[in-house]
Image (cartoon, rainbow, N blue to C red):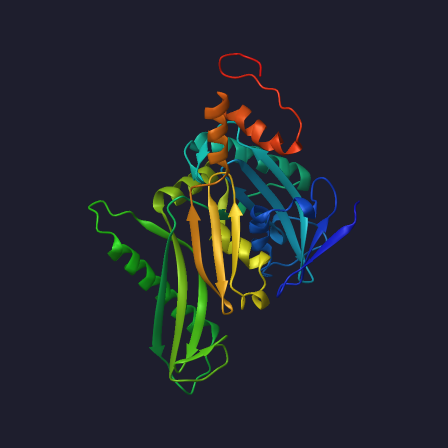
Length: 335
């Protein structure tokens, strides 16, 4: 067994990773940080024997690859138990959106089965991070009066946040002025700030006051994106226990709260989409996603050297080696 590497987290402790080919910290990119997001919540109990009841399965269905990991939480430390990654055999996804549901489902099934062989039990539930080329965001402020003699509890705060999400969804719907209005699902949100009697506060719990407020930054994806993701999961007999947005999950791990006073940008350039999250004055203030990423490089190589998509990907991945790359173009000529 290899050495354990530790990654300090602001709230949840440290992530423990086995150093080795299958789980090397140096190989962890933002998409894998996305997967770690689900294990920083601390709502399950670690037993001596790993099973589905004391572990969580997280899945990243990307444009080019499907990555799955299984983790446990032990003394506020995230322990990666198993992981597997496979590339799509064809271009079944474009710009983060599933185009060919059966082909994507087959890749997800193979990842799931490989993980099941590693841990020895059937996987039935999964946490998923979503991407898509049509991300919409809305920032909304809501407030309400409360009983000034009662302490503010989690139920009150949660109700306030849900009201903010409801109004954000209504604002998004009102902005659509086309005849065929697109249905949107909320795939994640961030609290920008709380307010107590009009004053900014980092946390409402335990306080008393007359008026509480919250500013939420909500993110939405079209139903076509979300429904295709759920269709893939259904085909491989998986139930989704949580859904979030990739940049939300990544920034939760990569940029601690103590760093968010700085004006920082987290950028994840994948194959199909480039995601960005921006922090300022202690909060996450913006999310964005554009369908311009690594595939654009691949397409330029295809046009320049007259090769198919698979060969263009091979050239792109090996061009940094500095050596000569031999290939055969679509005309059968060796170059």
